Structures are given as C-alpha cells and as structure tokens.
Image 1 (tube, one colour):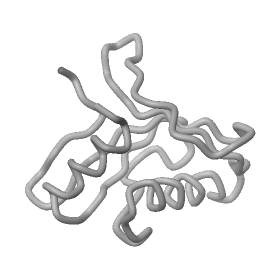
Image 2 (cartoon, one colour):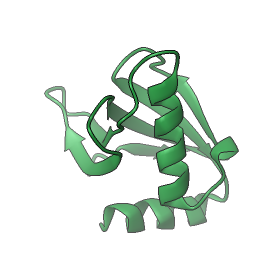
Image 3 (cartoon, helix red, strand yellow):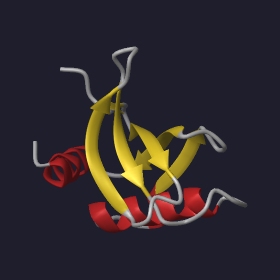
Length: 104
C-alpha cells in the first residue's frame, strides 16, 4: 500500500496537500493524486500570505499528533499546495499517532 509518509532512521516525512483559506482547520484523510502518489489532505482557515497557512498547518498537525511544533519542519513546498514535512521523534510512537489520527 502506498502511504502518505515515509520512515527514515531518525524522522518521518509526510506528504501533504494543503488547502489554505479552507473555512476551518481539519484533516480530511489520505488521497491519491493522478500520478498515484498519496498525501494527507489538510485544510486551514488561515490565508496563504506571509507563511500564515504553513504556520497553521504545523500548529494543526502538532495538536492532532500531540507533539511539539518544534518537531515539525517544512522541507519543501513553501508556496505550493503540495508540501513535504519532516517530523522528528520516536519513530514507533509517531507511526502509532499517525495511524490513530487516520484511524487505519
């Protein structure tokens, strides 16, 4: 099964498709694009101006996963809807939290 995240030795990389100015902050599950790549669909109410939507994304994931915001970094996609996030922490714990979040 293709997943929205990849596990590395010391972190997890999470592919996200962000919808800024989406009316509310929500995680809408996993979606597969036309190329067959999976990503986590997230919407935030923040506007895509001066990094506000990216900050809201990190805050939402931090709260949803129960980890500090400092554990999440934007690796790519600063001005794009498709982003890659790096999440640092105990890998086993992160995987459990991601799976619980998505109710897999």
